[in-house]
Image 1 (cartoon, rainbow, N blue to C red):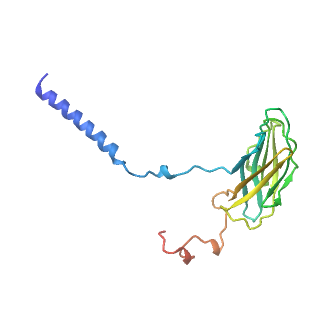
Image 2 (cartoon, one colour):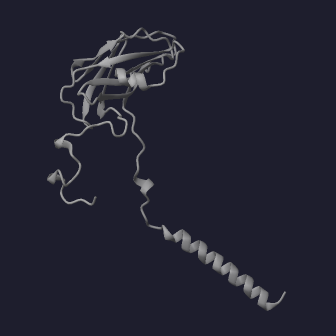
Length: 196
């Protein structure tokens, strides 16, 4: 092997190593966009003290007309094969109305509650173990992104938790904004100078 080809191989190896080092250090110390992003956070959740019943994804959902509903999933996870009944739910002391009244849950079965519109959009399984109920409650000026106390009462347990208030998902372009919520800074001077 000649000295010239060995020097060439050494030069190529050095360039490759320096290139890898340069590319790796290019982002060193930088904060990436994905490092601070958080995935969608589910609603509140809680379990009975004995672990026989649980509630998941609890949120107060507001609609465009000002109505309110409770979104939740109640689960019978009792390993002793006992059925459990959701007797009532209160949001900030106000009783939630159900349609229909939930039936007792068998083991590993659940009750899914949501607004009428939410249930309409939700894929529903017809296996007999999931009951879907429409929920309604009076909107007592709940603030979007606020938190509200919710109490689930079962025949064997009470589960207290805090749930977030959210606006129902709308199809893009379907919400008409009034002058109070105009996001164009030309029409709403309170938004200040912003790039368009």
